[in-house]
Image 1 (tube, helix red, strand yellow):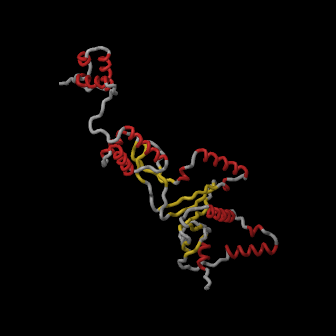
Image 2 (tube, rainbow, N blue to C red):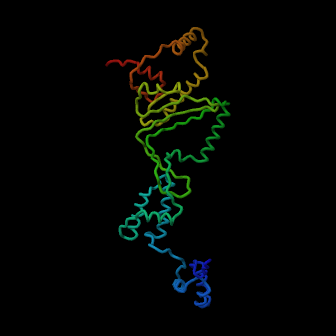
Image 3 (cartoon, rainbow, N blue to C red):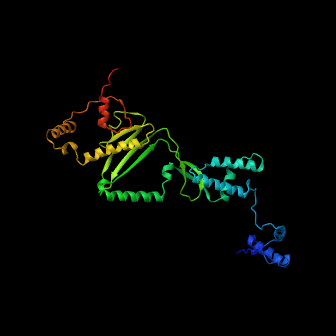
Length: 335
């Protein structure tokens, strides 16, 4: 047996209530409006009274009223969005503490807001969601489209002016490996791709400088270690030949270290292409002497003696395995 439910047993919508109120205001009797619509008699009288008092006809939700007015909640949402754009997204704890301060200022009493209040607030403001903030430095986050276009045009102009081949164009980048990840869960605007937090300093990290040419030729890596000294055998186990290492107080690359790396890169490039200045000089005895020095250094060499674990002061200069072992084998003069 199929049961039929009358449409008059259904709850009236706000549009139907407004239509019923308008019919009564137009002169139709209340009893006729109740009989021919889904609006109950008590509901019709309630909204007629609200209309006579110049109140807005709206259906309010049942249950406890929000602790904050709607305008104050909108200000909270705007504050969350502004903090997100500034690179300082707020966590749920920070948001709850801020909301409790506002409630105390609004009502004059101390009220602890819990998980239920936060869930109801999130339901009222669907544009908010829990996100994971990506840690970025301010320099990386300030890169924009115009800057990239300007850099590309300057790079293209330089390549054409110097008639560069693919073997002359290198992509150089430095990457740091940190011991701690500061990513955290924050409250942010839903759907936004700009959820980042300002990167904070960490106690230790390692920086690697890598360069690869457009034709696929890669440059041996350069390592930047924290501190002022490093062990003489620090890169003995490096699988890449001709790798270099230096130190910096916090293992960050700076202009001085990068300029020194450019000199080391130029020497490596000449050696990689077989361009020896001593061989190019063909002026009699001087050429023979320089060639003999090159032969003694690169061909007629003895195996290196085992060295103890000695620390070398780098002075922000780049050192290869050979340089580190040579510095470790030098005897210090007694004062």
